[in-house]
Length: 596
Image 1 (cartoon, helix red, strand yellow):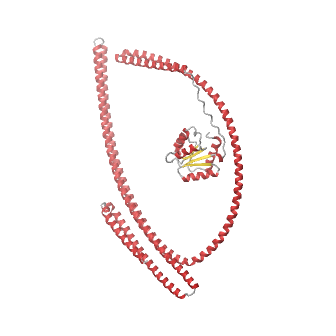
Image 2: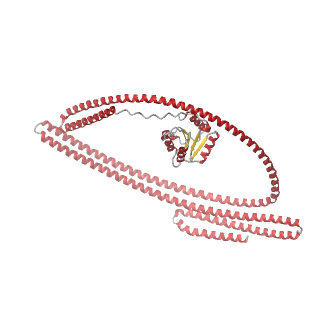
Image 3: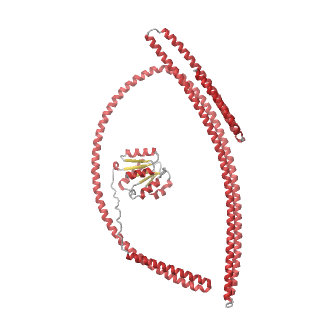
């Protein structure tokens, strides 16, 4: 016991030394920022309170150890007196029993000391964890502030770059327009000179037209200059608006920083109050532990009698339970026998029903194949008639295009008298259009000739329609694809209780692997799953002809998934929470009708 007290004192001294080292290490860093001085003072007060609590705890443990030592000495004296007084064998057995009781008391005291030591160690670790969390929180806030400043700087730089880019683009666009205008003016001047040189001697009217064209060109130049000045004005207004927006954003950022600082101060005050409350609760807990220890000493005296009574009652209860279990085992054996007989009868009935359904399915498949052959012949005839009609319509359309092109060429020829450049352009356009129409007509005639000469390939026989044979619940396999084990177990319990066979998959990839090994009759899937989600799983099922007939029920709490689920091929979208009755109704409908 004295060794334990010495150990506690040494631990306390080492802890005080560690706390002082942490204070010496953290104090310069925390005092670098005047805004964290209050936080450091609060942490210092908390550390001092923790040291005071540890000192009181060490004193209490020392007192407990002293009481235990006194109790041990008292017990030793009582044992010596008892050994001297007891001479007979019966008296010696009583002394041994008393010694065992005293050892139990000592063991209980030792266990209590160990428990208190563990509690103190847990409290120390919790204090260290809270200190680390607080330091991480302060560091996170500092990093967040630096990140916000960096983002703001990047935003301002991006805005400035965007403004410069807009000015550069505007300048380039103005230069391009000016160059185009000069080129157009130069082309017009050269064209006017050529026309004037060719026609000046012939018609004075053309000279007047050239003068009119020059006037129009000057008006166009004036309009372009006005447009350029308007574009410059709009660019200046946009730059002013961007600058005003930047100033407003900076003001909003300053207000947001002030709000965050106020929230941080409020959080620190709330934490201080919570820590004071936790210290009060810890004191109350220690008082309750001491009261519980005293109560345990009182209860220990009555425990032996109670245990004996419980032992006798337990023996009697075991005998009664054995009799009850024997009777229940006999009933269970009889019930298993009856259940096996009933299962054999149901199995025979199921096989008979399956055989009848198979014969019915074969007859239906034969009739369906005959119907499909007749429909295929009718479809081939309809396609032949449609091809002939399409060829006739194409020929009429080509002739109409030829007439329209001829009319357009005539109109263009009439307009050619207005000027030599216009006439040449019209002739070139008419020639190109005529060549295009002729090439298109030749291509369509060649395609029609090849279609007429080529033999009609026999169409591939259509896949026979899937015959829906109603199934019983015991023959229906329902697959559950969900990454939540709780959901899989809950849905599995519902289906098994209704006699269905169940296959469970942890995600979409697992479901596709199991479907390849064993085809389910109905698929129930979640939306969000790792690897392959519910939409991807449904699309894979629909794209495979072997699995496209499987009805899919999707479970989701998101109502906006209706359109996306329908596009993927989901038959039923159930919202969370859903009724078990609704789920069973949909499955039974699919068993009777298929996907419908």
